[in-house]
Length: 114
Ligand code: DGP
Image (cartoon, rainbow, N blue to C red; front, side, top):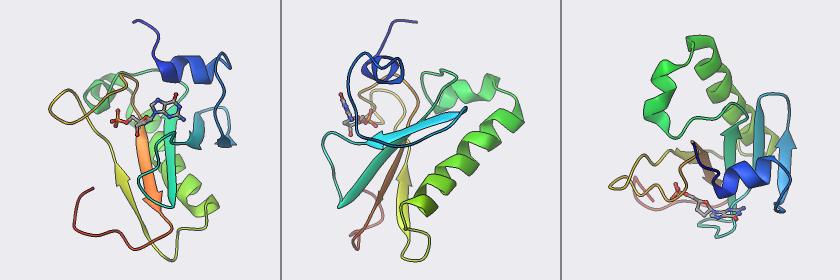
């Protein structure tokens, strides 16, 4: 699997504004924010996209999604609410082939999808 920009952020080879990190995930600000708060969460165990998470153990997938929610809480979004997005593949609008959850919030988001 070739290195993506997110592999390089995870390896510390290029900078990012990290908002949270633990043994399982890294959360950092999106370089092109689509809302007042726009953070990306990646698992440290690499997968290209949501589809590939089917080959993970259920507890690994569960940990990832629990931690996405925990990052949203840490960002202060639990009460106000927020949007999570996972784009998969070309027609899904995925531009970086390293699975990542978008957390968007800090303002009222229009419509049902970004
Ligand atoms: P997606 O379209 O779902 O693959 O989203 C990829 C996101 O990654 C997009 O919103 C912009 C963001 N992004 C791309 N390159 C960088 C980067 O070098 N640093 C950061 N922090 N975000 C990036």
